[in-house]
Length: 445
Ligand SMILES: [Zn+2]
Image (cartoon, rainbow, N blue to C red):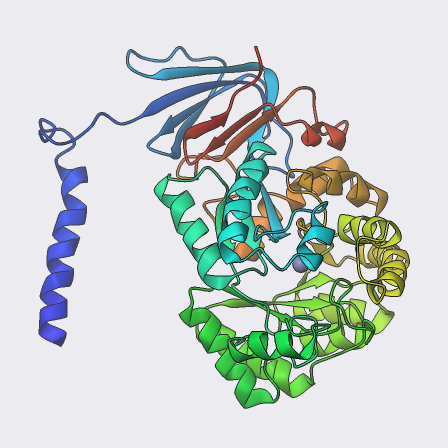
């Protein structure tokens, strides 16, 4: 077997090396001409966090940035010109916390009360959600909870080019303890609870079961592992937002995820849950609504990221007050909304690393960029807020081909009118979107 593999690997290496070697020779009969696009950018923020460039030309070849040149360079014959000479151009944005699966802000009540929709309906809704997300300028998202097979299918359909949407880094289902935030039987009548419980594999009690749950999510295609360290706002449980999982369970989850080459992120509200997750070695914390000095110190010594999701409690509170959510969620939404903003202000001032994520799905798909003004309110400059949704979010994903525009990076490119470095709200109106070198949205003439 070893020998066979080796010779196969050698053959593969030869095949892979061939195109480069034959570039000067006549192209093979089956080869298609490379897709080349010249983008004229009025202002180009190629490396968020650094100063933008003036008039520039981005040369895009086969889905990647091939070259960036000063001034407006005329495209050669056969290349396409995209004129963004009066616009602000920057890398596609990354949202580290969305739920594309089946929910979309407003229809929450419908989802919680209707029994005649199933995964097939949710699959179709998620296709629409993906399209809205890309049109809003988000070219990559981390999906932190949905039907594992459905989200994986959506991820792969986007990569094939069959469905228009952002590239997806998928978590599958959130791992949770029994009765916790990710236990789908919460609040259900006994006859329904039994049916749900029978095929629910993301729920675990005790370290061994939690290891099993991580392995099963990876088996279903998860690229990142998410677990519920504490209670959550939207689950139909009156148990509050306190720590739900034991430190031993969290350690088992994080260690198993890391051993399988996956990062682990924790949904966490109470400081006690966040502390235990950070001590377990988690890579990032979602929400982090209640932060004390000790927790803030732990973030920094562990080098973990905070994904703030500022707009989630705002949207949840509005829905709860309008009666769209079960009564158990109302006091939780109120408490989280008040605590989160104050906690995050302190954390940002203290130097905790923030990376952009919104929990969209609680709020409406396509409204992701409304998070930016909330970040400014925490004390970020527009440049820092933009960096959190590009360079920093790419770092959290461990992806050095995303987040900046330079030769060899992926051609995920957006444009807005006016500078978002002056007013981040301009990112709420994205005029142009290119995903992997393919134009998904053009400015209205
Ligand atoms: Zn979420």
